[in-house]
Amino acid sequence: MKSYLRVTFTYMVFGVLWILASDRLVELVAGDLQDLAYFQTLKGITFVLLSALLICILTRRALHKLKEQQEEKDAVFRKTVEGSHHILLNYLNNMQLVTMEAEECPGFKRETLKLAHEASAKAEVELKRLDAVTTITAEQIDSTIYHDLRRPKS
Amino acid sequence: MKSYLRVTFTYMVFGVLWILASDRLVELVAGDLQDLAYFQTLKGITFVLLSALLICILTRRALHKLKEQQEEKDAVFRKTVEGSHHILLNYLNNMQLVTMEAEECPGFKRETLKLAHEASAKAEVELKRLDAVTTITAEQIDSTIYHDLRRPKS
Image: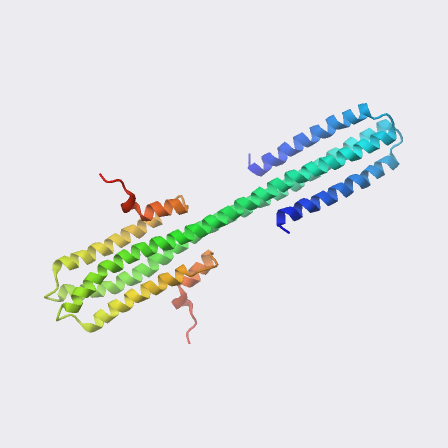
């Protein structure tokens, strides 16, 4: 059974049993109409306060779980970006060796070298832009990644 | 005021008012002790059922919000990995030009070229491993990224 149905059902069963049992008790104790009315009101208010306490606990717990999940979402995002940084930086470091050797190689075209440097810089800028996302939603990340593609042509 | 306190407080106020008002009404209507007891029990059960309905709605809503948040977390992860793929593939494509030219350049060391190919392959494998994470938690992502570093030495 789903958790919210279990909670509701348990409350309902205990609530109805409580009403039946306590009503019977009040009937036994109360001597007259006024007595019965007085005990019933006292009993009713007690029941409302206890139910309110239950509602308070349930809704507070739900709020905490939701906050935990939001924090986990943010942590997942940060870790994923960190992981991407890690992968890219490893790769950049290796490619640095290639460009260094290309620079020393006489026949190597300077414009290709320039392109390599630009590509490295671009990759780092793009990762930094991803890292700087503050509103962590899929939409926000999407528009950050495809920033260049979706920017209106000027 | 926090949302869960507002819900609890509203329930408490309406609950107490309902008890006071309905008790007064039952007193007016009921002719004798038996009548009063009967109406009170009916009233009590009605109140429990209505409270149960409220609890059902509140807990169901909380569960739905939690699910939405979990889905958002997964979507954020997928989008971030997709973004990293995008950044890395752009970079890989550009570096392909560099390695292609290096291959044609007579003085370029073959071992550096081999290193470049290995680095590209490694970056792609690492991203694929990140993409294949099924239990999306910060810990799981962390252990996937630093897989090589934390693997016990054999």
